Image (cartoon, rainbow, N blue to C red; front, side):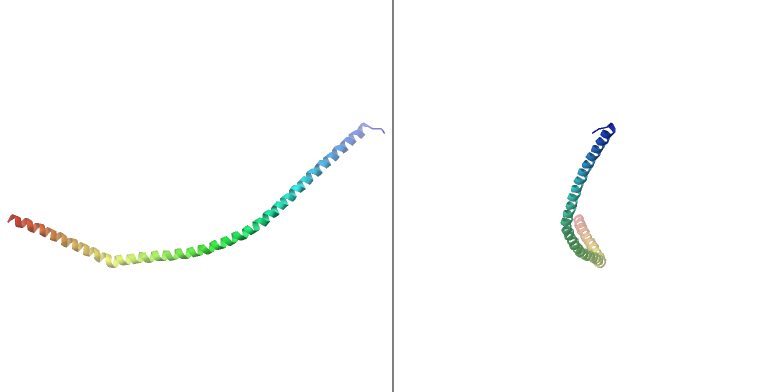
Length: 127
């Protein structure tokens, strides 16, 4: 067997290429395992998330029902506040002005009585 420098260089290149192919095959195999694990993880996550989403949908539906009830209660409270305001205005208009007049009249009568009482005593004491 006769080896030339070109033959040896070719053999080294072939061995390097074979080594490169083996390394790349190992990396592709590891990448395949990583992809398999990723697929299993995604499947497990999907299996676990689907029931949670169903429960979440039920919760949102119940929350919407409760909000509709609260909206009705809020409307009723608003109506009651409007009615109370109208009743207050009505009371003020019908009884407020006469009560102010009565209060002013009684104040005037009390003031006049007090002035008469003081003036009468003071006047009697001087005569």
